[in-house]
Image (tube, rainbow, N blue to C red; front, side):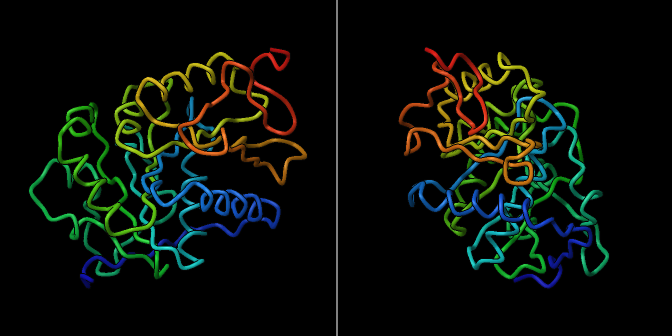
Length: 252
């Protein structure tokens, strides 16, 4: 472990019990996906649906339970992770981050940061770029995810919203599956359906959906696994079931 790569996350919030338990259920569900599911993209359809929050809290819980995992911030256009969570290197040096690693000739082990969570490492993005497509389409990005998957049980990838840019489809094509974060009573049904189609087009199985900010659903979060096993039927043509309602026509 490089002594220069130790980082502290200063602004990790303490969650209310109901939300902590909802994230815990999501974590437990991950264990049923099989050993081949390692690279998991967490994505939303639109901004401000809570994808980065879900990614961070899922990663934290995995690490706290002793599961080796790494969080990759692949939202290189508008990431706020470093500032929002107060990421600071203990030696005071600058965080290089994911976009810097992809654009420069440095070792991956020098870019990945070790946190106060023994089993949780992180590769944040500290330099937003106007058009990260060149970085994402470069073979180095794919190789990075593969290298991380060899070292960690889970690689959680925080990706930009599907409805805004094509980055998510590219990232999803390199992952074993995706968790879609949807804001309850807010995100239009047709946009959710389109996001599912985008994932299918990218060859990225939809592992499940986190319905965020839902009244009466475990403190605001609900997780729905699709098809019992990833890659076997999403059911988006027949309506999404989230426990309290549907996206689509439930009568079909």
